[in-house]
Amino acid sequence: MEVFISQDGCALYKSGELLVITNKKEKLEYSYRDISSILISGNVRVTTGFLREAIENNIDIVILDKYGYPKGRFWNTGVSTISKIRKGQLLCSKSTLGLEISKKWIEDKVLNMNFHLSELTNQENLLDIIKFQDNLKDNTDLNSIRGFEGNISKIYFSILSQTLPRQFQFLKRSFRPALDEFNALVNYFLGILYNRIEKSSLIAGIDPNLGFFHRDDYNRPSFVFDFIEKYRYIAYMSATKFFRANKVRKSYFINENNSFFLNDDGKKNLIPLYYNELNKSITFKGKKIKTIDKIQQDLFEVAKYFIKIAEEVD
Image 1: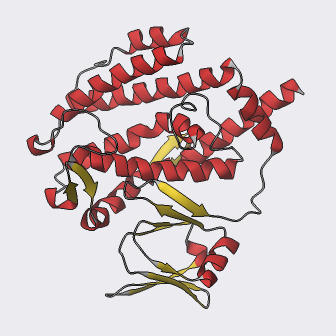
Image 2: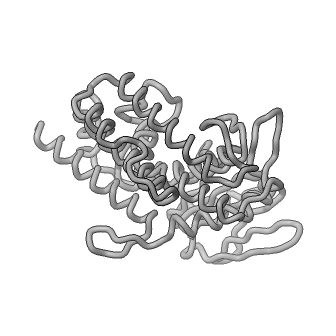
């Protein structure tokens, strides 16, 4: 279970075998055994006793910025990694192998976006998948790949906007700052997903900072930005679903100088819905598995591939 804390003024402390979270209105108690992560976006007070107990129980504690992206985290320094994974990852980053891996993830991203549009509009292949795959196939120019993927994304969001209620339709994809409510919600959902992928990378023994495609463009762990491409659709589809189902209100957002942010009321009402989407069961290799657990399994497979590359070189 993940615990999300967005209210200012909360206090976190240890009481016996329980984690206690208090604010002006209520007191909540949890067993450490039931918690996997604690995400904190509000201004809270935390005791060292709580931190020590959480670390000893391998509970990931993440401090988020107002966009929902991790600014820092506490974890057990004893988490083991396999040196061959890091060696294989480094070898991929220094060769065309890393680019080919990234291209596959980008292709998955576009296929998922195309599937999403087909579900919304009952029209097939609105993103011209064959043309996209042909351009991607033998392309080794990073700028060319980025440009072509960017154009495909513009088409996707242009069509996606038309499927939303009129008051929430938007002009373009915007990041930080978000220029409208839809982008603000997508950005926050991506921040949550980004955090889970960063954590899952560490669990798999992968360096979240050593990427292949985004390494020169982002002042963030670039492997996470590479890998998240194939899973961005979760944030896109979830946000679209909530807007179309009238689950989202104008009052859930703050507008500061034409920059939109999800407020506490919005987080309280929409983040649980997003976690429901992340915890939905899907079929993976013939078995039922949660979407969020599939991400971890995918990263274990990537780690195995890195080991294989390292052993081939050795």
